[in-house]
Image (cartoon, rainbow, N blue to C red; front, top):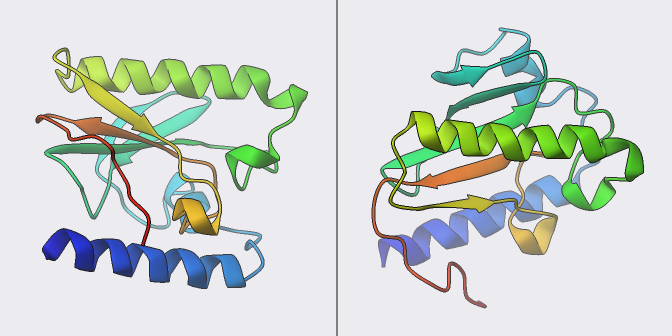
Length: 140
């Protein structure tokens, strides 16, 4: 029941976010700028990784680009974003290693309303630290 309730609230948040135009400055931009604190796991010149405030597993870390360069969502990527996307994938793997997720982990990118995206600043979810189930999502 709790998981179903959480999924409904995530769907509501995604619907609300999709109904608005992507903001010029996102919540994640404010985190990068140091205006909002985060529990940092990793940082380099390109990206920042921090713990999700509503984790779905024992380990749940978000990896975000510091400069999203128009990437409000993955489906907005074009050829110029290939180096950034590759770096984010590498950073996700590095975070998983730092977090001791050698037994396995999942990388998730939510895209758009039906993908339950609630922040329109590209971000990768590194999820693990426990046995995960499959499939990860079902229809309503």
